[in-house]
Image (cartoon, rainbow, N blue to C red):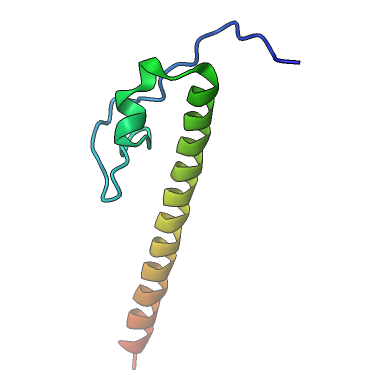
Length: 84
């Protein structure tokens, strides 16, 4: 049984319209085609795009956290080696 849709799925755009090195928007994490054809997508496709954007956002956040962790551990090593 299919669920009825009462509300339109809003665009995930947050007004930060810059593209990262992989071609995804830095604000909403949609691809060029996902942004370009948003108004033509079905509700199911919009839901899928929103889910993909959430996954991309998590992936970027994890990568940033790992990079920060690696940087901070390198800084600690440098600081400890300068003590001797």
